[in-house]
Image: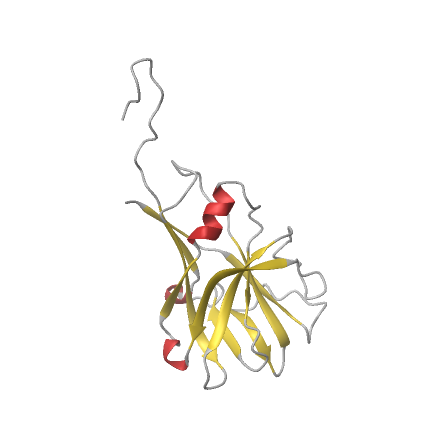
Length: 182
């Protein structure tokens, strides 16, 4: 099956800098940090036209470069409910979001390796029109740890976040006066 790799735009918002847009930052923070306070990572990506309105799989690939605390930090993928501008969003203007079942428990051994979070259901919701594609909010609500992921501003491509879509290239059957053509 064919696949396509997308490179999302990223930023994060910080309760300690509630009026500041941090889209220039080379890392994507999620969780609680002594300097940045509560942080929410935000991502946006434009989905391509595909031969079907569903994907077989959608894997969000992230590379953690910093993690505080020895315990696992659960990073949750949330569906962003409202439109926002990645280059101007702040903590005060952060869009509403809804939790999904997609998450990953990050440990210190996950640092500098790529993790994958299955977001197939979310992407199929976007493609099928169930939800508007306003992006993703990454949260870590344990209140004590921060996880920092590489972004495309880190200038080291293996750490860039990716969305890998795998889809079927099988043509959709069409109606015919002689029955279905397969």
